[in-house]
Image (cartoon, each protein chain N blue to C red):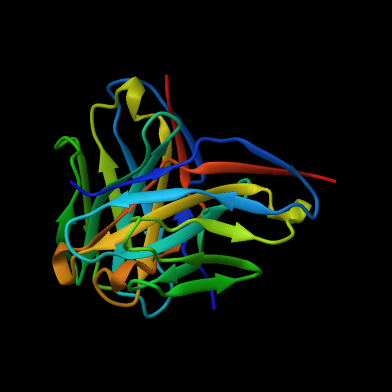
Length: 114
Length: 114
């Protein structure tokens, strides 16, 4: 079946450190891949996406590249800030029309310390 | 532009009761999806509505139901509440059906079942 696996958290970093959150997926067909972020007390927000192999999604200094050969979509940021502290969800969307739905990973909590 | 609005934000119920949650999508969005978020199971898809019709459904028992009105507002209902139904219920809207995974989430309704 279709599924998403993320590295377990929490991930604790100091400000300005480099961030990597690993995400791998299993899917039949060719999914679109997403990273959503959930700040404390809020709903999820779309952070970035990639719709086909080798696409790179980027936003707010975060990047992720759709790697079909390794079925991965790792999230990276060169220099994290305290305000990046949140839960990050990797997700895939497969299907279209009335058969499509988002499948989320378990989420990875990021804590950035000053 | 107003975001997705969910009411109530917090509620406490006892086992056996029923609950109704409401979601107002972003103006112009015609699709509404519901997700259950728990620490153990993460984010799980409940159902999606488009043009007042349920288009997609997750693996939840029949106690979980929903509907969508002509103005795209949606409600979900859980009957005969169980302790395990305690969760954050997230509503998300999108322009079209599924919108290829780009969803706009509300802040959620946190349900506690005692």
